Amino acid sequence: MTDKMTSRLQVAARAVYRCEYCWLSERHTSVPFQLDHVIAEKHKGETSLDNLAYACMHCNAFKGPNIAGMDPETKDIVRLFNPRREDWKEHFHWEGPVLTASTAIGRATIAVLRINLSYRVAVRASHMQEGIF
Ligand SMILES: [Zn+2]
Image 1 (cartoon, protein in one colour):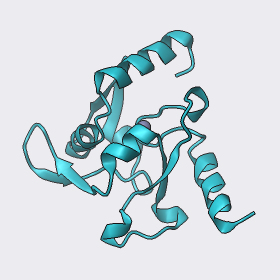
Image 2 (tube, protein in one colour):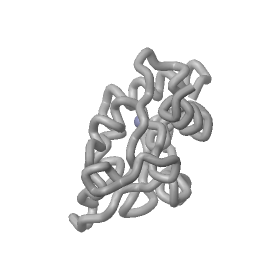
Image 3 (cartoon, helix red, strand yellow):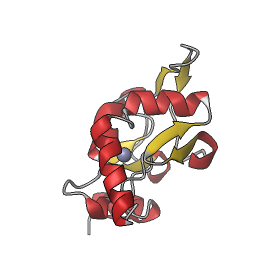
Image 4 (tube, protein in one colour):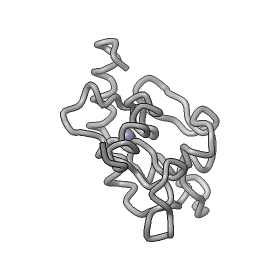
């Protein structure tokens, strides 16, 4: 097994095969999840377990190399949620299938990663109805 495969499996298992941003379960999607560099390589983020997160294709694609975003409430620029250093529950909570922020970091992360786009909320609502979310 290569180092790359080892780290992929380690990151996936650590995340319990769930997106570390929106909590989508990889088991219930058809597209394999990706390794997100929490601090993107363009900002000198390392490819190490300390800087990798398991992310669904939606979160990873919208996040891109971003490490900060605008808080839609205050218009301040704030850094994005860091799943390696912070507790998800300090920044987010669920209101049904809608992800709601408790902090500026949560609001900016939801906005940049577009976690509440209607089709994504619809998928979560459907998974909740099926009892798999
Ligand atoms: Zn996600």
